[in-house]
Amino acid sequence: MKYNDMELMICLASRYLEDDSIVVVGTGAPCAAAMLAQKIYSPRLMIMFEAGGIGPLLPSMPISVGDSRTFYRALAASSMPEIMETCQRGLVDYTFLGGAQIDQYGNINSTMIGTDHQKPKVRFPGSGGANDLGSLCWKTMMITPQDQRRFTEKIDFITTPGYLTGPGARETAGLPPGSGPYKVITNLCVIGFDEESKRMKVESIHPGVTKEDIINNTGFELLWADDLGISEPPSKDELNILRNVVDPLRYIIGRGE
Image (cartoon, rainbow, N blue to C red; front, side, top):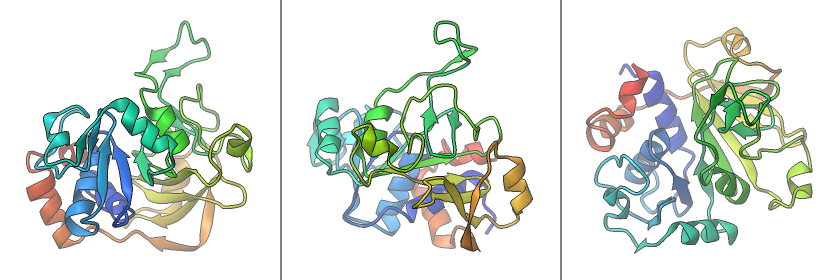
């Protein structure tokens, strides 16, 4: 079956969310990935939202983290402090974050473009809960288009810490050992992080994409896995549920067209 880039990224992300794990998501593609995972791979996946919804069985795609649907048949309707405290206790396995820039160590900028914080070239929404989530959840993932402006050698502002300057830097900064960036899923490939250097390492290339395409759309040198593979395309079942149950109005998957 034909599919677009957004559908591919959502399906790939959904496969990483293990059963009996906990994920904090916002709206958009991460929420779609979590919903798809819950309906196919991980029925006991617990979804949490920053505004306080814990364990909902989402009937349809919410449009905000405080949407009433994020509390539908939920285990609890709590609060933002409760969600952040749960992360701080080390109970949350996964989170998804986005941003305008990301560097080779997975540091994310969602604050501004420019060198003067008082007079930026572009001002973005800022952290919200992103710093807390990226600091305290065990594994951070990102779903994003890949280009040289976004994948840059040096980001203009660190909103959310990745591996900072490399091995040991997160721990030195006081963040939980073993936590940090996990996967970056783009329209070109799936990227992990090298255990030794903590730098981005390409793990699989999407069908029809070349290594040159990835290099030309990245502003720093990437590492490449020895067992570099081809990303598994969306299955018929994944696309059927994604299109007809998770996002029938194409709020998210329509962006990939």
